[in-house]
Image (cartoon, rainbow, N blue to C red; front, side, top):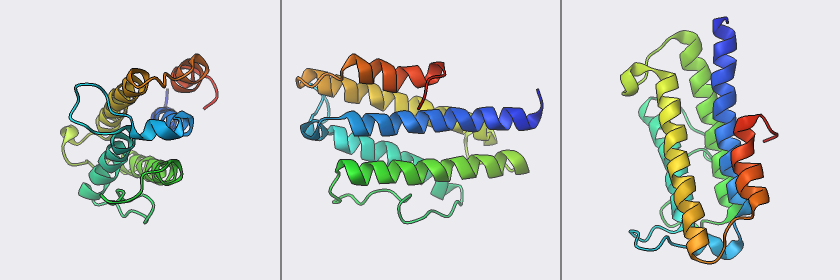
Length: 164
């Protein structure tokens, strides 16, 4: 396996993760964006999604990446609807992709994560996965369980090699 192949595999993993985030945003029932997990600190599904996107953008900014307007964190008072959240994930997802490619090709280190871009990417994927679980739980606890077609087919199956 050559380095180019490894780079493309890493970027593909990031793209799958971001596609899963978009699949989730698109599958949430409209009233589901206001759902809150029981016994939680009160962060709605929409606010959890905004937090996930803010983590992507925040680490990029901290590492000196220039962000487009759409890739920047959503404003605290912004209306967090499907359209705005999806646009933010598309833009910040593309920005992470570009940043990873640049850092992996140049060998330039990043701040924290022992300077390793793939380690940082794995952190982002783990963080997103954690919140996707919280979101699925919030929906289920509020009577809006994701159908298996979505939960399995659009959130899990892309990791196995399915379309995303």
